[in-house]
Image 1 (cartoon, rainbow, N blue to C red):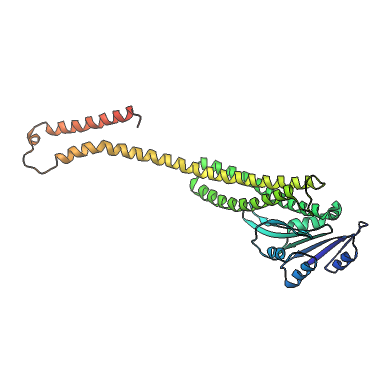
Image 2 (image 1 turned 90 degrees about the horizontal axis):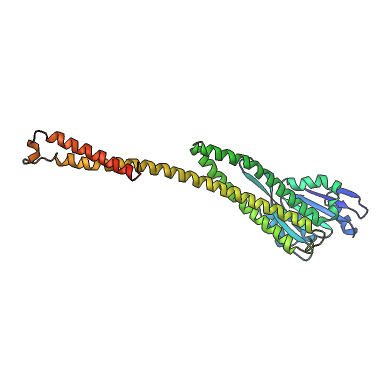
Length: 322
């Protein structure tokens, strides 16, 4: 599906399909927003080439798993980022790659399915008059995507707090599985946010001829975009580290309980080794064992065993093993 929005120099809007492109070319002072939803067919790719879009950028936009990037060309700047068609409470992300070409009089957005961020500004842009500056509109779309990610991450904070409380309440098996799953999903989000932060950093510090650079009128917009991407990355990284710390804490507590159990078993073993030796010694089938003829030998051996047990327990308590 192709839809277009044309803004004339007099501030008048026209909505339509690809037919408005010819009018935009004839009117040298108008601005066009071309939105493409769906697969980039050969016909659409030729249309993009006719609008001076680079073929390699078009190929990158056609790939569903290409990393986010920003690249400057002679006639436009190409931005590829990973939007979000949806994310549930368990951080299952349904990504939506979105490509944008930005020039002085043209904004092109391309996405394989419904892009919430593009749709949001398509419906509200006319009230805000953002199409007058396509570069600022493009960065507002990126900023809005970051806001949607941030909202979902903030909701996860309560889930993480609940998992921590459950872990302290010894509900370990289920909680440990959830923590490992969340840590894996946070790692995937962290990779996406890392790309977005690098993209925003390049836009802020390097800039392009079409997005703006330095301390021009776009600086604050570029700064806001970088701040949001940076916050997303640091917040996701913090949650990732918290999940890892909770897992390690559980392992440490489990190891401590196991050590205490092993210590008790070791003490019991140490207590019974000498008396087992004595019992084994007098259990040997030799004919000449002088003590066997002693009337009080049995009671003496039992007393010796008891004394050994009491002595070893007293020793273990003295050295604080008990």
